[in-house]
Image (cartoon, rainbow, N blue to C red; front, side, top):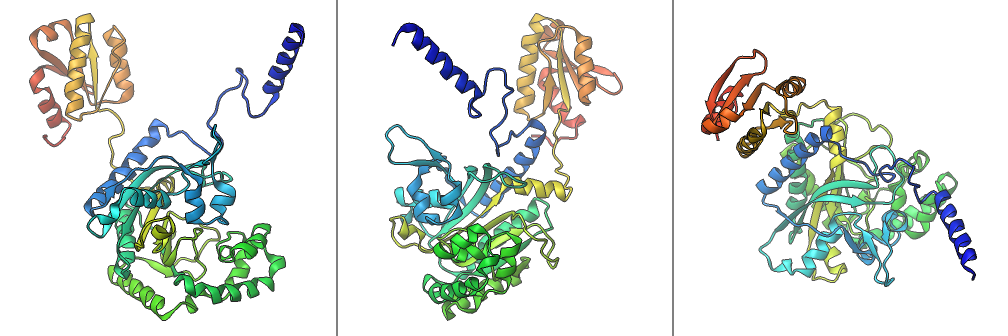
Length: 457
């Protein structure tokens, strides 16, 4: 091809790229990917509050943290959550690889990666029960809507090595304790049993027969689910599908005596622990690995009627056969998780005062080149004492710095000048009254703690 033709072809390719909706031109204002969001500084207090209390509760109940990669092989989720699940068929974020195989995806949920790590690192030999927890971002290529993001955050807990009903109750009780410590009150646990795997054969036959009589009322997805996995139809949030599900036979009525006894014990324990719960016969959860006890936590007061499609705060269930299904030895297990964004929404909705110091209480001002170094040393003292401060060390005049301190509404201003650097002192100024005094640097933290009514370290 002649050189001029190459240039012409390159120019056409460039123009086509500029028109493509997938490639932003240099003049387009960038934005976060659809369904994902930035966590801005004013919102960070909520995240710190939730995560700090969550980890306090986890440590208190002897759960050990395990972090897994954000990328896993696609086969992990296909084998665990089910090839016909919505997660696999619609929601996996697939990653292109140069070799083409194996295929990788962004992790879609927390349990399967924890089980994979449990098997890979031989945790089965640890003293039982083995209690693990995790926190971090997860990804689903879902249609973004209120309370549903393509990147979302969860923390969860898993218990390996116990098939006892008390473990199911304990997990829900820990979740209940956590919600109470966050200050939340408006929630209820929806509870059901899926029985054992053998219990489902007869039930699925009855369920198919029920839905075939009402197939015209089902949404397109549920018509497909009826052929691949009928239990999924019970979980559909479409109103017309919920109406059909309301008259469907109940799995709870068909499970084995052993599974029924397990469920009864779980309920008895929850009653004694005063965990607010309701029986939800249509609750099946969206993952294939669950057996026996399953639950969701929804944001409404116990006893209030359901309000259509409810966005759950969290969920959980028992998955006694997942470790073996993923290549390990048979180990019973159960777990639960919360969505952090959803907990924050609930905290805001209930108007909970976080009782956090979200603004600095001290401003460090300086005068002169040498004083900038002295001010940095003072800032280190405050940081090590966990006294939050603000500063504007790039400014030279004292008045602009005092105006900024006034705008920030701090209680005290620490002024460092050339003389103070030589003397090893600072000027401590009351921001409201303007009264000030000289304080030795080694006494500054003690004085500020006393005046800010902060406990001595």
